[in-house]
Length: 155
Image 1: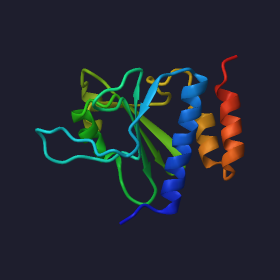
Image 2: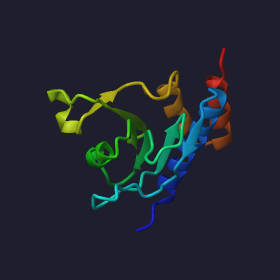
Image 3: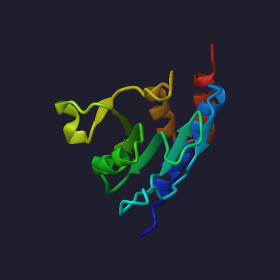
């Protein structure tokens, strides 16, 4: 089944806004798009909606974006843990949930496969998730991009 227009619109909007952030923050990034991610020795894989390596290009991304419109859950965290993806952002119910992988897995992170639910990205310094959320929800792409760019510029 192909993704809905609403899914693709949100996925693309998030990717467009992240591109603006990377440029304005002068962060080297390497987009994966929705490349299928899998380890050769292990069966199964996953296709994130957007994915990026930060700083240097690597075999697996540092950041993954998952847009959940009608179905899906955080159950993909185990797959991303196996690939050592450092941060996974889910867009669901018009808000972001950000999970950061911890090297040590304290008891409280076991249900999330070693990921901690956080309120601000640790991978993308200074990104304002609240403003990003409002820009993703804005029905006018150009206005959203301009507002986001203005908020991403260094002061």
